[in-house]
Length: 212
Image (cartoon, rainbow, N blue to C red):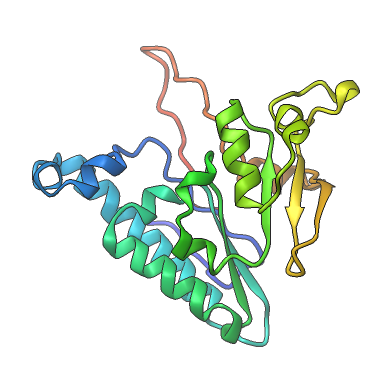
């Protein structure tokens, strides 16, 4: 048995990579959702539990501002229970001196209801022209030249380098912002979501950090 997780710590990371998550189509289809595998049901339950713990932690102390960042939030928001949790979280965050950030790879994952709660929006480099178009629509920006720049990594031609994004603030102003990784190597490692190589057969057991 390890030490209990201190949810009032300055920086807490939950890592739940490798879950057998059902697709959004499966969750939204009554027939398919009833045929989900046990592993998929368990994955949805675990994600909800992690989100609920995070929400509780951000609301615990109004004298201290707290923020939760949910990467690939669609995994939680695809289920009706998860979506209700996210909706309540977004609605009640301000009065608890807290905030929640939702991250996804495509702007279409944010429907009108969720968008109505998002005061600050950020868009990073996109993979396709259609995704870039949706991303600019997410920011309420119309600019055909910017669409082409948003799918390019060539900085000399106006493309977007890693960490460069468009940010829309609470006053609907849109500007270019550069986001840097933490200068603390421990924080960088704890928050790294890049997939790790699968150990070769016969290798020793891999240590997994569930929370830091």
